[in-house]
Amino acid sequence: MEQHLPILQIIVPLIAAPLCLLLRQRTLVLGFAICVCWATFAMAVMLLLRVAPANGGDPGFPMATVITYQLGGWMAPWGIEYRIDILSVFVLLIVSGIGATVLTYAPLSLSREIDRDQHYLFCAAYLLCLTGLLGIAITGDLFNLFVFLEISALSSYALISLGANQSRKALTAAFQYLVMGTIGATFILIGIGLMYQMTGTLNMTDMAARLDTFGGTRTVLVTFAFLTVGISLKMALFPLHLWLPGAYAYAPSVATAFLAATATKVSVYILLRFIFTLFKPQFAFEMLNFDLGLMALAILGIFAASTIAIFQTNIKRMLAYSSVAQIGYMVLGISFATVTGLTAGIVHLLNHALIKGGLFLAMGCIALRLGSVELEDMRGIGRRMPMTMFAWVLGGLGLVGVPVTAGFISKWYLISAALEKGWWPVAALVLLSSLLALVYVWRVVETAYFDSPADPQLDVAEAPLAMLIPVYVLIGASLFFGLSTSLSANVARYAAEMLLGVTS
Amino acid sequence: MNTVLGLYNYWIVIFLMMTGFYVVIAQGNLVKKVIGLNIFQISVFLLYITIGKVRGGTAPILPEDVTYSPDGLPIPPQGFDGWSNPLPSVLILTAIVVGVATTAVALALIVRIGEAYGTIEEDEILALDLEE
Image 1 (cartoon, rainbow over the protein chains, first blue to last red):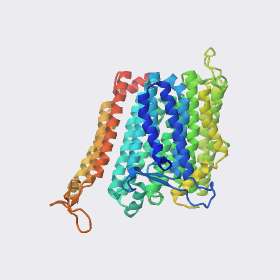
Image 2 (cartoon, rainbow over the protein chains, first blue to last red):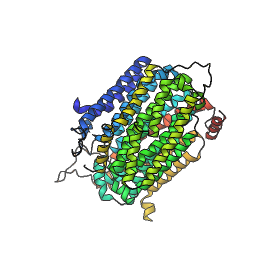
Image 3 (cartoon, rainbow over the protein chains, first blue to last red):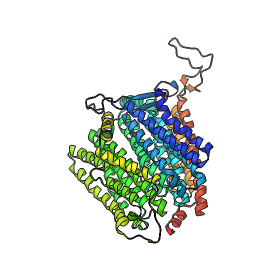
Image 4 (tube, chains in turn orange, red):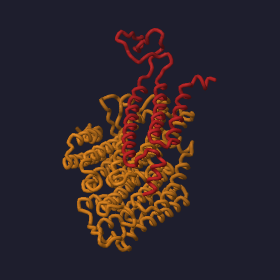
């Protein structure tokens, strides 16, 4: 049982998805899906315990162990191999943890936003999406990664289109995402094909070992271009982010919270794998100066998206633009190509997932009571839904990066990485961009607390406890990781050292 | 000359790829966009399949009465130097399934868009969205 954990992590949600269709009955399916999600989270925790360094983060300890699992007993370069190192397990934990918390929150919010007889379909698509995202993190086979990428993408198109009960714009947003997502995935497929042509293998570790001798041919450059452009589309790196705001704004609240917190993070993980595991930083950064390109796009993205966010009236759309900006911070961390920089990028995967997940869940509470997420309808909401708005404010402070929140830890690492390299203008830009975040967060806070209610007659009650608890779990976790970094930043540092091949 | 004729399979792939990509971008009709997307994907399928062909190689089937060379390797049948690589074709079977699934989801979405908006022309949908 213990040695089959890696495959169970994928198989359990995968099998559970069609079972949802067979069960059909609403309460049964929701209960079942929630149990499955928590089971996958438990498995991710067990994997972490097996992978994490034994003596709790003492520097000087050799690299954490790597678990490999041969599917069907076929040995590694021929068969598909699951390969779990410290970075994979970190992403597995984020995805399964967010997935479980968000689905626990879901039942009441779904009742408001989706027809009751479609709930079992929602659960099936949700579990498939979870399977795809977990699979990407766990697999060591490049083609398998493409298949999981498409599983998660196809199910997320379905999840987004379920927002059609609220607004028909969800359908066009889902279609736009489908076109852009498929182009991105096909680019990755071309890259994988060229990669196979050059190396004759699909196993990423094997591929990396064989690719070195071919370094410098034009095919390597073309492959690198296809893979990075494809994944940039998927992770909505500025200026390839056009599908994201619509998709997040019109999807059901639950789907938005789940996708915003996990889908783009997993794409960042794939980028890390491409750059550091397949191509090696020497090729990407020293030969191609790819780091400068990434840094320029990241900084442009942070400023452009944050500025656009300031002018949004739909708060879900505002948070979506803020997500594009936050992707910029992660990519900025990666572009430093130092241990501190990568630590910043990787730890921000977790911190942003918690903060943005919590914020979108709070928006779901507001949508439940108000039936709207427009800023003007939220006037005075702070006095009527104090608990929800308090959580929102804590999450908003995390986005700004105020000390004691998780966002501060990410910015702290980013700025120290910039200063380590002596790039103080970059550090200054990071600080300046936080002010933009402060502006868009403050707009909501001001409207919610200092404006008189839009319609005093309208009776708006506090969100039910079953929804508030998951909101506070995520927001509380983001505060916890703002105070204690032993779990988040240390694991991220291990992952960064592993990717760069540095042993401390 | 060799770069044109000798690599003709790649030229076909690139031509199809660009055609598909252009159709996706330039067409306003959503169904035509999906057709463009399909052409785009099919060009990649062709790329994979041509990668698998080994010059002088036969179909990758090992007959029961195959003879082995002294160092334990099977000897290809008369007139062939070896076997083609079956793996790219296998991979592309998976990718075709993914492509079919994507097309199905896209067409389902278009049906719903058609019901909700009464049109599947992109510019008309945009105009309707702006009116709201």
